[in-house]
Length: 207
Image (cartoon, rainbow, N blue to C red):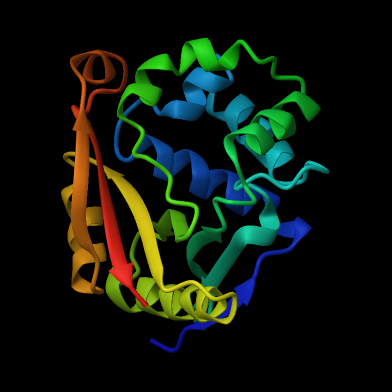
């Protein structure tokens, strides 16, 4: 399949919202955005995530951080690549505030913070890798990754990292096939109770 990769635009907000929601849930009924926005209603979550991609403050969820892969007919995948030294936790909080989410959201995600890997600000971070059902994941992700890592190298980065939930076997294997290795993990029973997975792994690739 011939795959082309382009930068996302504001017009892609619905597509990006879907990618973020599905990726955050990772096959579960509940993900971190369900908790942040205090809703399990998919329509509500997609609307709020769409707003988050367009905030004046550019968090890691901003549309400018996303790439979109397309085949001959349909969109085949998405990937977010960003700089943690710029898209900080404080920036994320500011972007949420711009769409009406108060700082108390941090209390709701306290169990996530227990297992969130340390952020290395000297790395290029990848997130929200999502491949359209029916598409072959490896070539789609390979095309997205190639484009994202080119940007990373041009900005001077020499390593890239991502995070996957423990138990997201298919996603972890996909990253490993493309050269990533697990470097650490954090586990918490409290996280498992809230999100249905025991913790999070961090994977890294040298560029």
